[in-house]
Every structure is written in structure tokens, then in C-alpha cells.
Length: 114
Length: 113
Image (tube, rainbow over the protein chains, first blue to last red):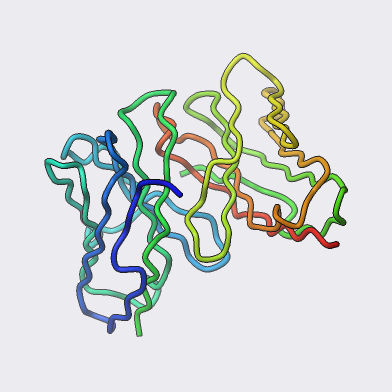
């Protein structure tokens, strides 16, 4: 098991609502990446936070936003939820940037939008 | 954003057999090619990765082969075991860090007794 923990593990929301997902990075890791994994698909990169600043973003609309705290934990916020936002949301932590920065994934948060 | 094509989509192998999964990419920020293994209800976990300057890497029963000119790499699982039954993903770095990845679509591997 990695030291990356995510909460909650499961969540059901109604279309149009807002949701906040949380991630605690592995000890010593200053970088957190968020991924969306639809059923039967590979994870898709949403964005990354490095030392509390956004450090790259995938092809996701602005209603997906994030935050990283001084202790390097992170939040993913999604506004105006749509049915297609139903997915497993994965957080991955790593130690810095560069070529030797393996990403360690948490178990994910299963979001269902009804 | 580039696509990473993975095949086959699913694979059934007998215990003791060889599992082979292939991956093709369009571009990569640098030569780092990991394979992740995901069990139901869990996040992906790094299985094995290959880095620049080598065309093959072996760790126990797992081998990555890399063909730079063809922009392809593959995972070979020797002596496949039922515990290998999981979804396997290849990934390619999309910028200059190994933590921003474009994943393939996944291969569901089932190893039968």
C-alpha cells in the first residue's frame, strides 16, 4: 500500500452540485497530481500541484479546480457537476519534478453523479 | 493531447503461460515508459518502468521491451500466475516529469488455472 490517502472513498452527488475531494500525499512528497478514470478507461491527467502552485493542466474545463496546502495535501473541486463527471478520481503523489519522480497512487474516490 | 494505443483490450492466459501487452505512442517528452497494474477497487501501482538508453529491462517475471524507432514498447509476463489477473496500463510522460502521464486504455488480463 502507498502512503497516499484519499477521502471520501465513495460519493453520490446530484447534477449541478459541487464536490470537494481530498488527498493526503505520501510523506516527503511535494507534488500531487489528479487523474479522472472513467469506467473501463485509463486515467486521464487533470492537473498537478507542485509546492502549492498549479504545474500543468490536462484537457479539463475550468469548473475543475484544485488547491494544495502547505503540508502538500490537496483538494480537487468540481463545480456544476454533470453526469459525465461520474468516475474514479485518483490522486498521485511524487517527490519533486524530473525524470526520477515515480507517481504513487491512492485508492481513489468513486464519484457518482445522478 | 496525444493518444497512447494499447493492445489487446483483454487477454486470457493459462497459468504458466506468457502474457504480452503492447503499447504505441505518438510523442513522448522523454524516454520513460512505465507499466501500471490496477486491481479492482484499487489505484494503479507501478509494476515496472524502463528509462533512457536501454531497449529492455527485466525484473523477475516482468520484462519491458522498447523499440524507439517504431515508438512502441511492450510488457511480457513470464510464467503468468492467477495473482497477475488485473488491468494493466502503459503510460507515457507528456511533459518533462515522470509524474504527468498519458495512459493507455488498459488491458484486462485473466490468468486461468
